[in-house]
Image (cartoon, rainbow, N blue to C red; front, side, top):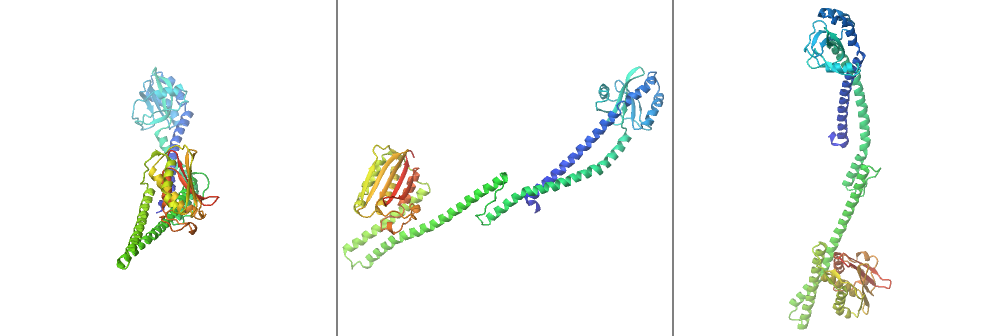
Length: 486
């Protein structure tokens, strides 16, 4: 449909408005010309009635008959047959009239107020008076006061009789038909051509914007709108570009999330397959070789199976916990406690694991630290994961330095190990689920690969942040920053 486009609808609306405006202008011009003709006619003939009153003054003062008055003004009617002359008393009663052969009047009284206004202004005030030959029509007139039969009265002259009005209406209609309508059509045509052309230019940018949106819709997500000027179209284009950027970033994040999901499934499958394979293998051995293995070997197989089940259970629990963190289901139960004492407890708890690898953990907190407001259980778990990660990647006879300080309203916890450090390519991904660094930091451990991801979620849940980097002296350093009030 042709009117589905914005340009077509706007053009049609403009066309309708032009015709309404043009018709209204013609109507106003027609009425204005009528009033102008009345004013000019009245002004030019303002002394007409005064002339008649002078001519009739000698006759009307002697109680003349209507025939005598008619004879006296006959020559005036001959000179100007378009006028109608009325003699009225001071109350507006028509005493006699002269309108031509066979012409009658429809009312015997007229309003004298317009006559008084006319005389007071000496004929310079444009005003219409009653037409006795009609019921309610008004006409331009000339009037003059005079004595009629020794009583005050008026000479009232209608300047345009009905015959004159009929001829004038025909001439005016023909004039407007020929000149007014022609002028109107020319003006309409010019306005339409100019207006539609301007609308086409103005809506061109809107059409271009529509084409750009369609291109983006068809899958060309890197397409952007060219911005020109600083009007509403430019603002709309800028908004579209911002929206397109947001959509493109969102799609990229969806692709990354899908890739991470696939990698997560692969990692989970790998980490679950190993303990399940071991469990199945040892159980099948117990069943098949029950009479051929010793009690000590049976016990060893059972212990290995239990360790694999424990690792399997730990992996499932940490996956569930991580999912709860990321979905916002875990709400910290905050209370005030000594962060320095909590770290000391974690270091003591992990002493057995560090001593078994001849690793020395040195803890150096600042004295007199303020209490921290947070979830003691979640913070302990995060610290356990961070220090446990340092133990796993520190060689035998190595060291781990744990420091706690407070400044700028923030707690700063650093864990520095003496391991090989983290390859630069791995640093941005160190807190991702199941992420593994290269073999220089990957030896066989009990880690699920989720500890650092959980630690990051705990820290961010308390309004802090955690980062990893390589120390200038060698080894990796994990820095956790927590606000005092979280």
